[in-house]
Image 1: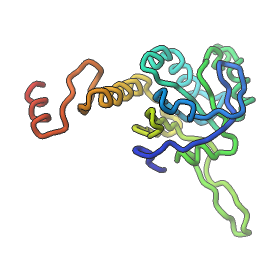
Image 2: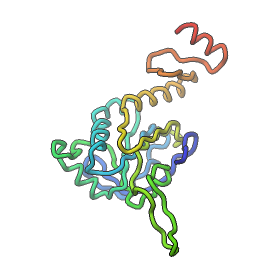
Image 3: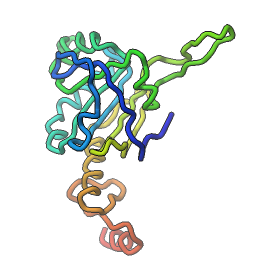
Image 4: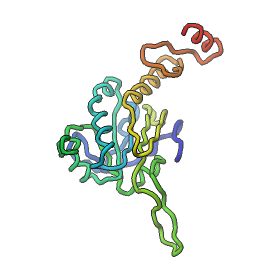
Length: 210
């Protein structure tokens, strides 16, 4: 499992489904460089159980991301056709119809591997043949990428553990506050609360005023 914080987000060009039903062939996060922050997250598989709760939860809060000028992009190892079918399936039938943000297809596993969230690895057997050991799916990885294409926050959950949209928004607020004001955000900081200067005097002042 790699740590990408502070590094350039791995680039890719891949097929994706956008706007809830349009398949594109060369989707890339590069389109957001200099324009938007990005939440790029992985989920294990289409037509499963925890995954639709997360995907729909992000869609239900999409206006809050848009207000922060943040693009939300999902990704799994499924094909673009699987994504498309799931997006056409009603939510009460286990689908995710109504989700509009992009879902990237990673059937070759390369994007998941480059982001360090692939639940397994390729190995060579005794006969010299390449084989995959583990589960050819992605863990629930989430990456907050700034406008320069640098990963500023990442979290990786095991497959049974759903993520928090509230915490994702909190981390966006913290990053954007730091970028705009230069102050750092203490534990459990929320938008509108006091931050502090990264000095001994700054921490002393913050603790004395709590």
